[in-house]
Amino acid sequence: MDDCPSQRPHRLTEQRAGQGVIKDGLPVAGPPVLKIFDQTGALVRHISQQSQPSGSHEIRWDGRDGAGRSVPSGIYLTRIEAAGSVTTGPVGLTR
Image (cartoon, rainbow, N blue to C red; front, side):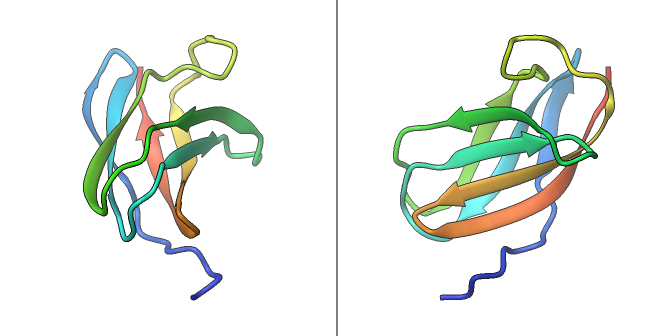
């Protein structure tokens, strides 16, 4: 298995008032974990979901950090981990 994460961008769709849905394809079945980082590399939010089959999925992000505070508009780095597979990509958030 390749240890390098995929560098394809995730799509943030259905965005309204700082909320959105991040769409990505899981190459293998497993519980996806979404981590969102700011431009300094600091962890902004950690979102876990129940196990999902491989294929296209949506993970909802409400534009808030782990403490429930709204984060500012900007470019964030997303990392989705599932069953040993990792994909990363930028996502923009506007308010």
